Length: 230
Image (cartoon, rainbow, N blue to C red):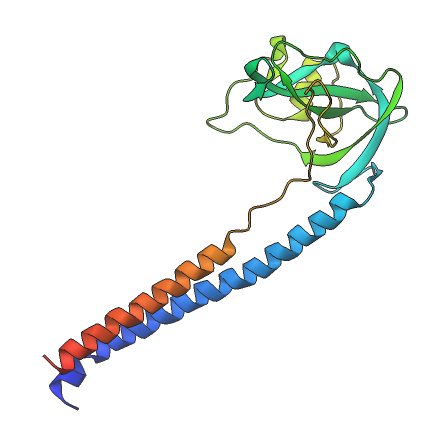
């Protein structure tokens, strides 16, 4: 073995190890791509299917229907979001309202975005009504979460127990039902229009790892040529 060839042993071994790692990461992202595509397909199918009656223990993000009586007098606001309205930009949030049910715990309903100065629209259904939506698990405040204002019924963490307690409901379901439906003529409350979908950027990540593998081979090839043919 020539001296030049011996100088290539360690770089070649290092390059092979890094190449295997990069190819493994790329292949893992391809696997994640197909896995995420399957999840998105199931979400799309569930979105087209009719809502099922709210079970005692629903799955997160399950599409369900709950029946009961809304309590506009116990309306609260969750979050803060600026949206365009016919009268200009307006700061608002998600309208939260309890749905009182017979022989079951109240469930908090996220009816959709409303301007901040309007908590409850005047034409909410009176008496027994059915809300179609999806189950959103409870949130818990983190280090950087904005502080809730229970006295003003303004909340920045979607914690059903904390919101329920502020509304005088010591026990509520441990999840929120996010209403699904079209935007009403007046524009609010504007409910969710689709089930939530996780992002699927795995093709981009896979191409990045495979691209780095190609670059590594090009760099190593250039190093080999310079070493063997100085």
